[in-house]
Amino acid sequence: MILEVKEVFKSFPVKKNFFGKVEKVIRALNGVSLSISEKETIGVIGESGCGKSTLGKVILDLEKPDRGKVFYRGKDISNLRKKEYRIYRKNVQAVFQNPQNSLNPRMRIWEIVTEGLKINYKLPQKELKEKAKELLSTVGLPSSYLDRYPHQLSGGQKQRVAIARAIALEPELVVADEPTSALDVSVQAQIVNLLMDVQESLGISYLFISHSLPVVEAISDRVIVMYRGYIVEEGTSKEIFSDTRHPYTKILISSVPIPDPERKRKVIKLKDFDSEEVSKGCPFYSRCPERKKECLFYNMKPFKISKTHRVSCTLHS
Image (cartoon, rainbow, N blue to C red; front, side, top):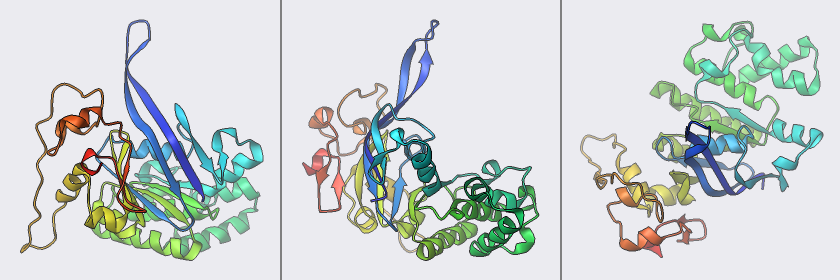
């Protein structure tokens, strides 16, 4: 087991009174638990604001949880000090959504992809350039790009550079937060294939966060479905997309068009959104087409469908 998240809660203040006291918060994560094993890809799906990116930031230690723990190789990352923390930072890397914002515009490409190597191993410039050449070759870019700057590259090329930077230290886990959303569809396929090739050659694990359900289905071993900070369904890619159980997951999948003009997917309609926020029970209650009265008293404890498939819904109690 590379990484384990246990009962993590995270909230953000959105409203303060005149005296600075917090009056309203958004609960981004509500008791989220998951585990990531070697050479495994965990896909995370859900609408905007469901807590996907916050989960990634908590794993990367860019956000501190209010409650709960993140364990790397069995050790609580909040207790890691100096050498141990450095090992964790080296082995858990990130690829962010927009490569334009995640690459330093003042640094040349070879400097960007080898910055981690320079910090961790203090290699001379000649060695760094040779390593940069190898990394660019791994992600399908020619060595002629070494001395270019980010603004001289296309979106897809920038994302390849971001991937090269992430794998430079040969990490165990890469958190990929919407790595294809800013790219054209044809380029998206190239980046997904590249990530899969890199995983096969280096044995890296991924936490793959995305809005694109077809991409998640193609790349993931297991899939987590999030809604308002809760994991509402979890299972293998096949279970989530072929044996869907939670009403919210069904709605998500029904919204994806089938690329065949002869076939039509049945679109599931949401209930009219209640103006009053549901303060207890299932957070999806006000929009759920299959809701029942007992949903208002449900504690979101998941029910086991199979060894790998769990769903947080009273329909499967």
